[in-house]
Length: 378
Ligand SMILES: [Zn+2]
View 1 (cartoon, helix red, strand yellow):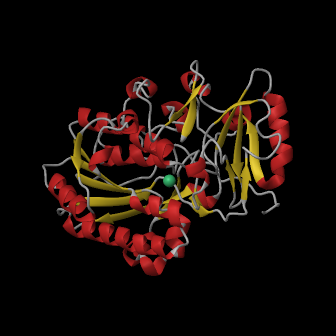
View 2 (cartoon, helix red, strand yellow):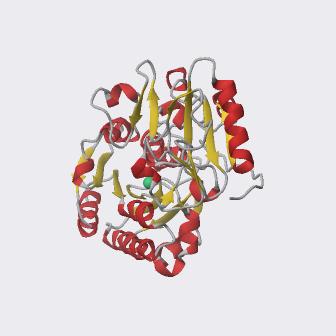
């Protein structure tokens, strides 16, 4: 494990992060009141391709497998995903145009205040009303209100998830269960009278990386399919469309020996009520009065290999952007994010997640930086 102290790559909310991309896309479509810090040109038809797990550094390291996107990357730019660099949080940020501290989708597993349980944002919990959990307007709702035709095109099974309702509600859902279907459905949606916004989501690059590693042959082969998806979208879109390709987070491979097990290392569970987040972005929820001791213990045990801070410090340093009172209690009393390619696993509480190879969530460039690739069709 590395021992050097490195600076975190802090999210650049409202400037060049996923919240800025959301509002800039709306502004480019003429939606009033939306900021355009990315200075996107006016467009009548926008296709936003969201590739789960396509980190900027991974794309730059695998140019041979992704020639189409790599050419776009020459004029593209990296954005920061936000913290934690994980799908639930980034979908919230992209889906609302607001930072995590305001939309409240604060990680893979976060505490439900008052209930004392963890909400897994991908599996959700029927007892939690997603609209009450994230009551603010979504990017898509604001677009629809401004007269934009909006469609979200992705695997059918994602239509009714709690996360989708919380973060992405509004507009039409179009199920498409193969790469070819994603392209043809997107082209059909984009053929409508402008203004039109179509978001295409593809999830298998992330799942391939989690199970087999983002440095595996399988990941590179999958990347080539993603590259073809982007190329086919660019070719299929009607004239006057703009294609943006982005991602929700990057990824690192964590070798088997580079894991600290919170369920085995003495001390890491002392004073801890619930361990939330995920292996590269931990929300540590402490028992009453124990936060100071837990912070000290985690700092001692993790040494200089992680950013370990109090909730107050993380908020003050802007990890989540401005934080609404409604959302503050969902943040861990202590937060820990590895600064190298290692992870804080919990082999008893999270046997499945702890066995993965590819992981993400932290404030390293490999986790944080995602591409913004833009192409005008026709
Ligand atoms: Zn993932």
